[in-house]
Length: 365
Image (cartoon, rainbow, N blue to C red; front, side, top):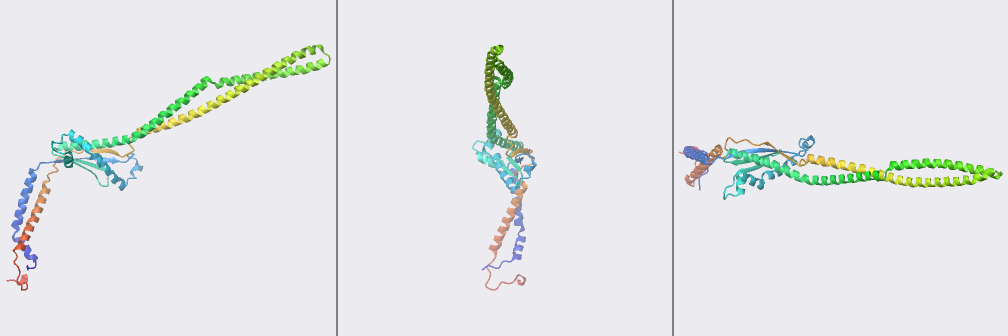
């Protein structure tokens, strides 16, 4: 049976063996500092991208930004961390050595993260050369923004093509209706027909007046003939023949006016219909044309807009190795290991206690 643990004795044991702890910490300090100085330096450059909501600086849209929306923007990390994009960057900057996998290189070089509760996307590149690290980070940021813009344009192209097709069809319909109106005006003039009808009506009126005069003459000649007038009897037949001719002429003019009236009504109806169709086609074309114009102006802006706000700077200090951190970790591990060693030694060196009761520390000789 071992003696009960005595904290004062344990602390006293450690205090008398402080050199062990100091030696361990000194060795750890030298080793960690030396190894850190021997490790190759690597520099990290960071480029920043702001993710603007659809509509850019529209206040109505910016007030609608919610934490859920900000969290959804993490999907844009896929644009920056795309294997295809990194492969192009590795080929451009000659990063891939023979026998090295692209995935392993990407894991060491690239880090993409959207800052929490912000619209900022950070792209970090770590390389032995600081200028190359900054160039790589800026290239990835620019290409990420371009890729997002192209993707947005591609999604809007379907709407643009459909709107273009509808606008073209509306323009063709407008040209067709305008052509029909022009042909109607050239082949079936309304104004000339109206003039002809007016002239026929006026002529019929004159004929009717002459017919009335002839009928009056007939009546007068009939009275005179009944009274035994020889001259009246001779003029009566001529008056009746003249009245018959005037009646026929009046009837012909009435038929002509009726026929031309029907033709005028048909032409007027066709003209009114074509005018209505022309106005409708013109209105439809203008609406679709304006819509197409708006779509062309706003193409690519219906999704979030990625804009590089900071291309990064050439790092002046290496990101690794982190000498202060490595030394601190080494000292901590050395301190923990030395204390653990002394604790085990303290427990091992203690003698088993006798069966008699343990003597308190203050009563020992």
